Amino acid sequence: MQIIGIEESLYEKMLSQIEMLIFTVEYLSQKSQDKCLSKWLDCQQVCSILKITPKTLQVYRETGKIGFSQMNRKVFYRSTDIKKLLKCGIYKI
Image 1 (cartoon, rainbow, N blue to C red):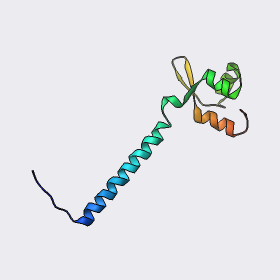
Image 2 (image 1 turned 30 degrees about the vertical axis):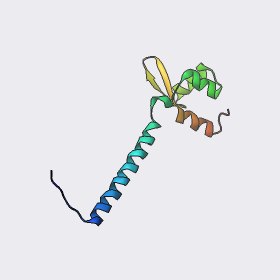
Image 3 (image 1 turned 180 degrees about the horizontal axis):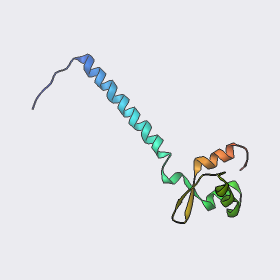
Image 4 (image 1 turned 90 degrees about the vertical axis):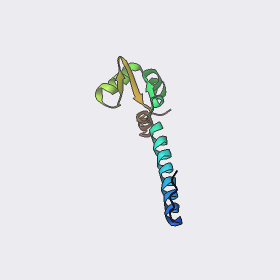
Protein backbone atom coordinates (compact mmCIF):
# COMPACT_ATOMS: atom_id res chain seq x y z
CA MET A 1 0.00 0.00 0.00
CA GLN A 2 1.23 3.43 -0.91
CA ILE A 3 0.31 6.64 0.92
CA ILE A 4 0.36 9.88 -1.01
CA GLY A 5 0.30 13.22 0.76
CA ILE A 6 -1.17 16.34 -0.84
CA GLU A 7 -1.64 19.92 0.27
CA GLU A 8 -4.91 20.84 1.92
CA SER A 9 -5.73 23.44 -0.77
CA LEU A 10 -5.31 20.83 -3.51
CA TYR A 11 -7.49 18.40 -1.53
CA GLU A 12 -10.22 21.05 -1.17
CA LYS A 13 -10.04 21.82 -4.89
CA MET A 14 -10.42 18.11 -5.72
CA LEU A 15 -13.46 17.84 -3.42
CA SER A 16 -15.01 20.86 -5.09
CA GLN A 17 -14.50 19.35 -8.54
CA ILE A 18 -15.99 16.03 -7.41
CA GLU A 19 -19.06 17.86 -6.07
CA MET A 20 -19.41 19.68 -9.39
CA LEU A 21 -19.13 16.36 -11.25
CA ILE A 22 -21.87 14.85 -9.05
CA PHE A 23 -24.12 17.87 -9.73
CA THR A 24 -23.52 17.58 -13.49
CA VAL A 25 -24.28 13.85 -13.54
CA GLU A 26 -27.52 14.40 -11.59
CA TYR A 27 -28.54 17.23 -13.94
CA LEU A 28 -27.87 15.15 -17.06
CA SER A 29 -29.68 12.19 -15.55
CA GLN A 30 -32.80 14.29 -14.94
CA LYS A 31 -32.57 15.81 -18.40
CA SER A 32 -32.36 12.38 -20.04
CA GLN A 33 -35.45 11.20 -18.16
CA ASP A 34 -37.45 13.70 -20.22
CA LYS A 35 -36.58 11.70 -23.32
CA CYS A 36 -37.59 8.25 -22.13
CA LEU A 37 -40.31 6.21 -23.83
CA SER A 38 -42.87 6.99 -21.12
CA LYS A 39 -42.99 10.52 -22.53
CA TRP A 40 -44.40 9.23 -25.81
CA LEU A 41 -48.13 9.07 -26.51
CA ASP A 42 -50.05 6.82 -28.87
CA CYS A 43 -52.77 7.87 -31.32
CA GLN A 44 -55.63 7.21 -28.93
CA GLN A 45 -54.07 9.30 -26.16
CA VAL A 46 -53.35 12.22 -28.50
CA CYS A 47 -56.86 12.15 -29.96
CA SER A 48 -58.28 12.20 -26.45
CA ILE A 49 -56.09 15.12 -25.36
CA LEU A 50 -56.71 17.20 -28.49
CA LYS A 51 -60.34 16.05 -28.82
CA ILE A 52 -59.92 15.15 -32.47
CA THR A 53 -60.57 12.04 -34.56
CA PRO A 54 -57.83 9.64 -35.68
CA LYS A 55 -58.38 10.82 -39.27
CA THR A 56 -57.73 14.44 -38.27
CA LEU A 57 -54.57 13.35 -36.49
CA GLN A 58 -53.48 11.53 -39.63
CA VAL A 59 -54.02 14.70 -41.66
CA TYR A 60 -51.87 16.62 -39.16
CA ARG A 61 -49.11 14.03 -39.61
CA GLU A 62 -49.32 14.15 -43.40
CA THR A 63 -49.27 17.95 -43.53
CA GLY A 64 -46.42 18.23 -41.03
CA LYS A 65 -48.44 20.01 -38.35
CA ILE A 66 -47.35 17.42 -35.80
CA GLY A 67 -44.18 15.37 -35.53
CA PHE A 68 -44.28 11.64 -34.94
CA SER A 69 -42.24 8.46 -34.83
CA GLN A 70 -43.31 5.11 -36.12
CA MET A 71 -42.33 1.64 -34.94
CA ASN A 72 -43.70 -1.04 -37.25
CA ARG A 73 -47.31 0.08 -37.69
CA LYS A 74 -47.63 1.89 -34.38
CA VAL A 75 -47.33 5.70 -34.40
CA PHE A 76 -46.10 7.66 -31.37
CA TYR A 77 -46.07 11.36 -30.56
CA ARG A 78 -43.84 13.25 -28.15
CA SER A 79 -45.74 14.69 -25.21
CA THR A 80 -43.67 17.88 -25.56
CA ASP A 81 -45.00 18.35 -29.12
CA ILE A 82 -48.58 17.97 -27.87
CA LYS A 83 -47.91 20.48 -25.09
CA LYS A 84 -46.59 22.95 -27.68
CA LEU A 85 -49.80 22.61 -29.70
CA LEU A 86 -51.86 23.25 -26.57
CA LYS A 87 -49.74 26.28 -25.59
CA CYS A 88 -50.17 27.83 -29.04
CA GLY A 89 -53.86 28.28 -28.25
CA ILE A 90 -54.96 26.20 -31.20
CA TYR A 91 -56.41 23.57 -28.89
CA LYS A 92 -57.96 23.87 -25.49
CA ILE A 93 -58.40 21.13 -22.95
